Length: 197
Image (tube, rainbow, N blue to C red; front, top):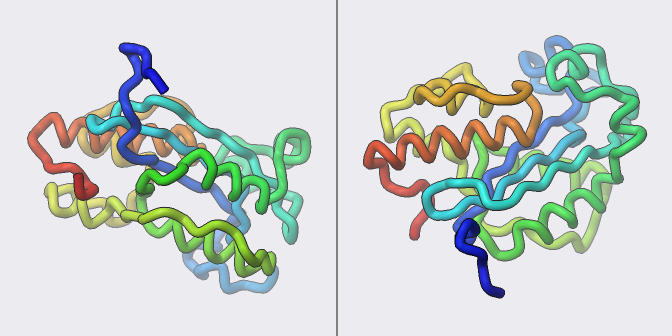
């Protein structure tokens, strides 16, 4: 495939997930009855070696066990039950679309979103799904650059390093953009790539 001059070869995929939540669910670690971390949105960016986005993926996912989103989650993400019902797809199809988008590129996210994928595969008893490619949690890398992200989220990465946030906080694609923009800014200041080149 010949890339246009504006398109550079993808180096990695930066992604973020939004999943079902209720007031207090984070503090209770989703251990209250009926609370599960069912994915409702997958946002991903293919980035080049400078972490400039080259292609994006944005998928809404219909939760199986809690199909009505909590008012808390709707306020937090801006995603409504009506949108998920109208445009969402089943988790297994969404997961496979994400893996297809990623192809063989390494993936990275803020925190352990790889475990959320694994939890959903287990929760729904999905067997034979393709595995995720190599995964990196960017929080330790950010810490090595002197960026303390304790108590913060993916949407905060860009602003913490001086890049204004654009979009809606806790929207998976906008949060992935914030993570990529923060990494890009740090690379511009001399930081080493967060993945082995």
